[in-house]
View (cartoon, rainbow, N blue to C red):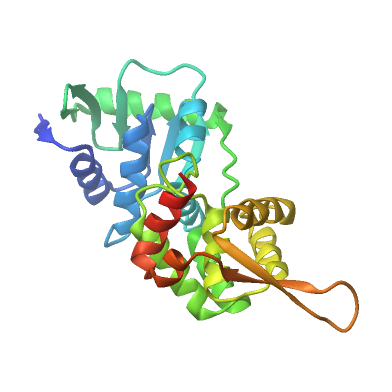
Length: 272
């Protein structure tokens, strides 16, 4: 009998599974925390990742993926072939991790997490086949967030390497990027970065729409909100043909004086 994984955190259990898996993994009915932890563990994983077929509750997936940090890293994993997302119609009682060699039931007891393991050949084979069948019949979850690697690469190319550095530094300073009071959203971050680097609104909104962050209209509405609150300012830049374009600039001295590690915190305090 394989050893149970007791007194572990969920990230320890996930790391163990990724280290030991010889083939595809089914991650069944994961909690919100488990999805977040999986994305973090897999993103930082040093080695060759198996493909993880995640069968999750659709509402839970939507809620978790509202965080740009989690969703953009998950999109990277999908792009690399390390993750696929499908939705469950009926969930088992526990969260399960199923490999070709063992089944782990993830059990939460207060603030403790345990992985109850069986490697009984017949049971493992039946369970693996069962969830393989359910996977084939499950609906795909459509993650619309672009991969973070695409976001950074195109931002560097279309705005500037300095803007990409600023964008990355701000994301690294945040625990979440939801725009719900707990963190800035990706459009606000992009506009703050553009203002810090005095980029044109046209350029940053076109980049954002092209890469899949949000529409030009969303960028325009968010710019107006930030401008009304004094976080950013604009100046008109004449062009040869058509209406002048707007150059974004930082509009608040507190933001102007903040470094990238502080910019998100200062902006959040002003917005609140």
